[in-house]
Image 1 (spheres, rainbow, N blue to C red):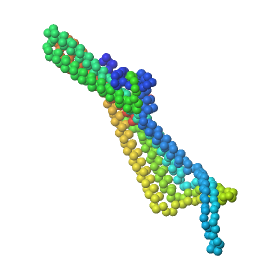
Image 2 (tube, helix red, strand yellow; image 1 turned 30 degrees about the vertical axis):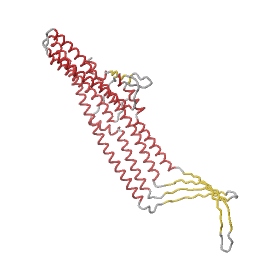
Image 3 (cartoon, rainbow, N blue to C red; image 1 turned 90 degrees about the horizontal axis):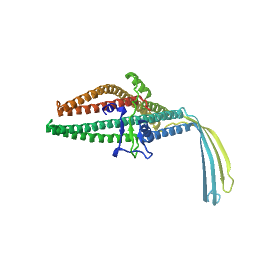
Image 4 (cartoon, rainbow, N blue to C red; image 1 turned 90 degrees about the vertical axis):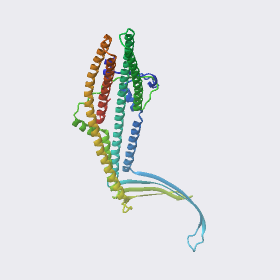
Length: 431
């Protein structure tokens, strides 16, 4: 039993009672790969990121429309009745007539000095940013699920330790009562064993509740709540990344989707600033119309026209200058956001790297601690059974043993979550 608790990766958490839920499809065992897939299928943050990506793609299509001609159709009918005076020397007369007009209008921008191309470039960068945001959201969801999954395994391990502590306390109480009955031990040993059993049961209740909380956290991380009983299986450890601190920083700068998104937004803001300034320049367009016009009951007569149109803004109340200034400010803010994001990523990488090293060393040390605590408990139990040890020594040894096992489980949980966080910090997905 103790050896199984030493390794977090060999735990199999069997969840029953109020904390056990499963989907209607008969989910039996939830592996970490299945948990991640459920999160990718159901988590609302991914739907939001995907919708933002579709919006960015639609914006890009709208910007590309500037390269294509615009064609419209309009039609009108007017009916007129009344007295008309054409000339003072001509008597007025009543007239009734209807006028029919319809036709097509077309316009094609020939050259606009960079307005359209800068808008297209900006929207292309915004699509790249939205795509990187979606990748970032996926990585964050995966990391959160993995951390919550191993958190549930750790909570199950702690619950097993406390179950074992209750079992040992019950055995010790029976032993103390037997020794007291034959006069080998005082009443104090029985009372001490009863108090130790009560404390062990309190810890058992607390650990069971923590396991239920850990499952709720996992289901929240998945964005999915099963409805029937299921088991959560242990998983193989995530492969270690062999990198130095400097290479980790360089890898994060290259791969982190948050930085890619922020960099794309800087490029988009610069293109938008160029497009705003280009509004000071003229626009050369080809225009054409094809119309039909006539009076009732006369037939409609066709007419067409074509030409070149040059539009040059002369004075717009300083609105163009204000738009340029605003666009430049947005570009400066985007650059500052990118610089801040770089600092945040570097801090995250360094913390994850140092945390992984510390957790690795602590994992080795706690494994040795468990081994020593097992030996100490075995020795104390044998001495008590032989009549040369005390109840306090047994209780202390059991407490030290439980604490060592829990510390070891926590160290292994910290190690695996540090690996997850480091991969997340580097922008590397774990499938």
